[in-house]
Image (cartoon, rainbow, N blue to C red; front, side):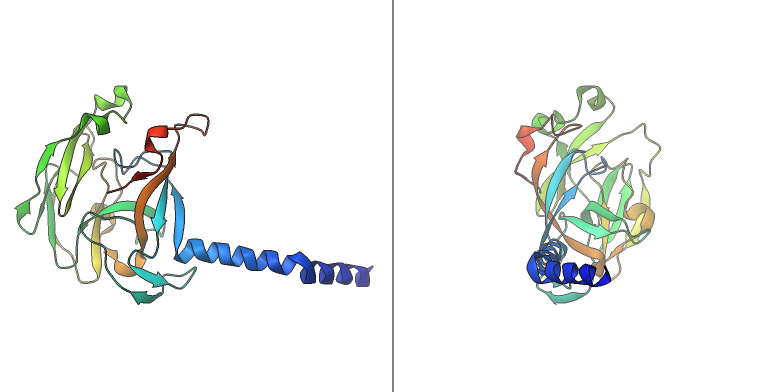
Length: 231
């Protein structure tokens, strides 16, 4: 019986078993170091990214990493202000999706939900109705929507004045090699206001596109969000 089991295992390994393992290693290495898909389980980036979105993450946006690690082999750029990035939380190691607000050497502060960076207040404008309409109508009544100007781009933000969140904080100096992250849903986001600046090595890639989106289940797709660029 023992010899028969060994023979079967040897046949499996010399047949398609070895190929299957190699294929799995290649596929997972690709997802770890080149590109990956990320499901969105929370509303911390609304209205830019919605619950039920599945986003494409470019893990070669800034550097090349050893698969399955945060070790950087090569680096060709760094995150810019306004980028949406994937990183590991310095608090508990969970993978998060947030926007880069502060760069190394910046001073960042907030007064009643209005950012100011390096001593200058960030500009806000009314947000296009097309964007706000992606939020459920009954929920729109509880929020305020604006377009925030973080150079070089503008992006949506959502505020909830009635929420007991951190609407203001004193100036924070961002150390070298670290980045200040915030969610676009400013009053419903666990971000650098609570766990501090994020080390560069913990940033795993840049979110570049919503590939698919569904409301609740795949039986309720949001067709208008398919293949939408993120900025």
